[in-house]
Amino acid sequence: MAEASHKSDLLSGHVREEIDHWLGKYPEEQKRSAVLAALRAVQHEEGYLSVDQMDAVADYLDLPPIAVYEVASFYSMYELKPVGRHTIAVCDNISCLLRGGDKIVEYIENKLDIKRGESTADGKFYLKMEEECLAACCGAPMMQVDHVYYENLTPEKVDEILDNLE
Image 1 (tube, rainbow, N blue to C red):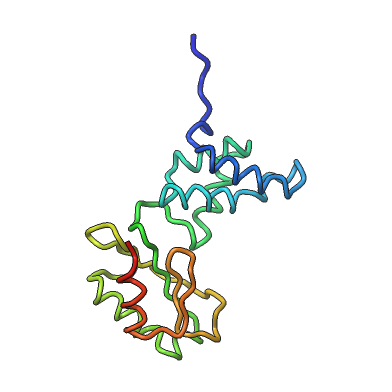
Image 2: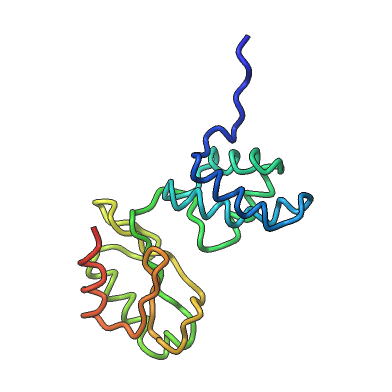
């Protein structure tokens, strides 16, 4: 009889290296501290967090799956369903709102013909439902696209940013 495979076999070598890097920063009994980084690595590679991938992280860290699900479902940076290749998050906090962040969201929705929480038909873009604060208030209004910050947005700047993405 063949040896049973482990759920963690689903994780790529790169993701395992990333998780191991973070595990090295914490005491052995604090493996749970690496869950955020592990999920970020998986999502970066896969585009979102499937149940199978979350189970693989739990297996690799020797944690109950619920410990991983709780983190993945709590934080807004994790996606639990397939989304467009480029994730757009426009800050919703007061500084951005006062400086026209709501108009930037409206502009993006019209430009891409989607609403918040939707992906474009071609699978290129995903506009996050909400983003409470991205901690760049002095550059309001701002957005994050694929982990890169863009500040002092105007419709023209949004066009330049989005039109130059592959």
